[in-house]
Image 1 (cartoon, helix red, strand yellow):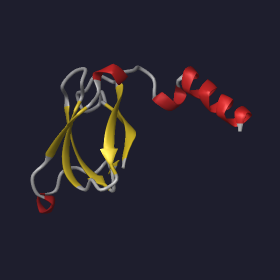
Image 2: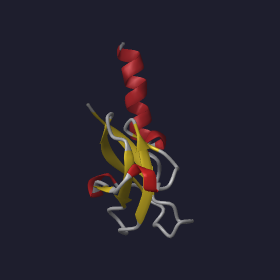
Image 3: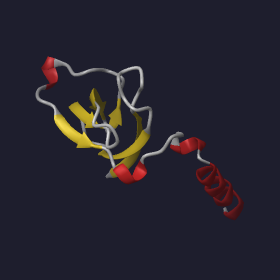
Image 4: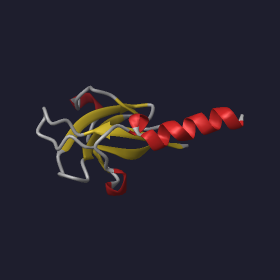
Length: 96
């Protein structure tokens, strides 16, 4: 099963400060290199059970796989703070 996860390209680490989505599978585990679709900054992370952690690559987890973020999902504010997203949540509550 795939699910979307938002990723932040941190300015502190030399990135652009944008948010973007990636689609991950629940069975993903190990070293992954995530490329920002805006500035091509690389983020070396460990993914556990399909969730990106703040942990950096570790030798015992083997070679890294590459994930490229989706350019169409670039944004300046986090997805969960987007007014359109919040309105859709309210609609879902009202309709249920």
